[in-house]
Image (tube, rainbow, N blue to C red):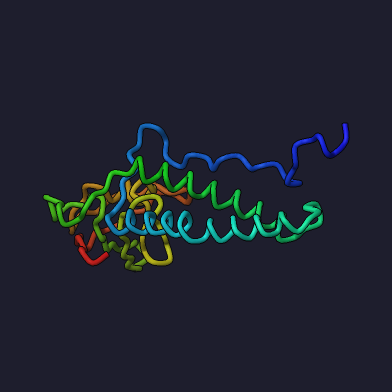
Length: 184
């Protein structure tokens, strides 16, 4: 069969969907800010970036031989990446349960959305905020609520000493403060 009768190929096969990050029995909790950031990214990709790439690919397709057309090949690849990210964001937003720290009832215990300061046995103090998986950013002190340290801190109060089991061994942590910030 000649190339004229074959389905056009983009050189690379489409990559599989990103693996689901959450196990099926875990809820996808998010802060209002994290939910808004994902919505903004989805809106930007679908309303601004994707139309620009579609326009570029359309223009490049009109230029003739697509097998050696860099704009066309790169554009199709970028379009697949954008579509994959849009599908991922849509699934994450549909499964999200938004938890507003302002609505938290027991402000003395650690739950989702809490900002916790704790002291390690070597004297180092660390402050972390328990957020959704998609919002976690260790550099900013935001950790996933299903991370091992967050699970160890859960339901503790200021003054509690908790046991944290890590790969390097068991460590005792002292919870210094529990706050629920509304500015994040």
